[in-house]
Image (cartoon, rainbow, N blue to C red):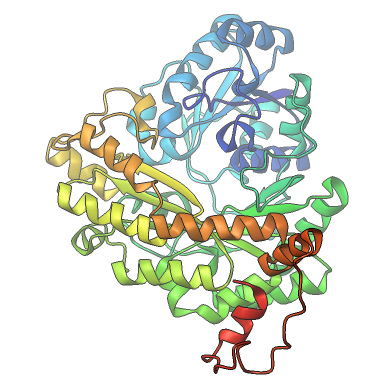
Length: 491
């Protein structure tokens, strides 16, 4: 029995977009995981990734050529339209194909999902146990009578590592030539680059995310053992010789014991590859010892959801942190030489222009290395989505608009011309920050400025030996505390 998984992620960049950034060059861990589980149970599994195709006619031809017995599609809310279209074509080309749909939208909006035609089965929650079991029943002629198959919670240490070859083998058929399993996206993480997930779930209660994630994964965080993660990294090192990686976890840094054990074993295994992970501003501030430990192990940067620079809005979002902690987290990251990927939202329900400017000013003060602004988008399964529905605020007319892109109106009551200006202004660095970054770039490119000037003076014949640093300045004056290092470094 031939099974083909279909990845529908074209809502952002459309067809024929392979390698064009993280949303067009990263694997789907969900499909990769159920593929690995199905293959471990003896099934033949293949992939059609819509991002690699040129259009729907191409999909039709490719589907007809492969002629699968079963297809499985994953669906976030933003994928609703391409999933619906792919199912319609599949049924038209091969009427007897068995169709299975899973993914977050199925769990969070089951009634809405059930309205999609041409679906035989819907699998909710996690699929590593239920999907292979459903394939077995289909292959043995015992097709379930019920349409909705409720997923079972797997033991994360017992399921196979995700099937990355499912994507790489498919991509290379269509011209993916990068020497990297996934597309690198920041300078601090060179290729070959991979992404991994160490756990599922989130312990926090932000209103723009919860309780949807609890419905999918349960109310507690389930994390793989450190040994299990290290074993996956060993295999990735052997197979792909990765030079960097990223943790996809919602908040890896919350578990101090897990992080300490990971850092110790990561270094003990001889890993030196840099990595990024997600954290929270309050965790960065409260647990600076963990920040230092992770930095020593190879952490190159944090994704941090600052969200807002206004305390009322942070409270409205149930973020559980403060504006001052947001700012202090930026300072802590700078202190430890960590890059900052700043996630923040504009146009939140009830937010005023003055409160938007608080966010703009906070982001400019933090001076992140990477900006990731979004216009607030109400997503099904969250408390803020319900709030928008109850107060008739949502402007979402099409599933494609569930993208978090900061380019189109999402809710009523917001001035999106102003928000577009605020989005752009938030990414303009303050003069002091521009100067500091220019100095850092100079040091990276040319080395110590004092050494650079020394070379110039030697070339021009104006060099003279400087007096040794002994605790006094060259003119005989006393050094301020800590300035000896600054003088000797030329900064």
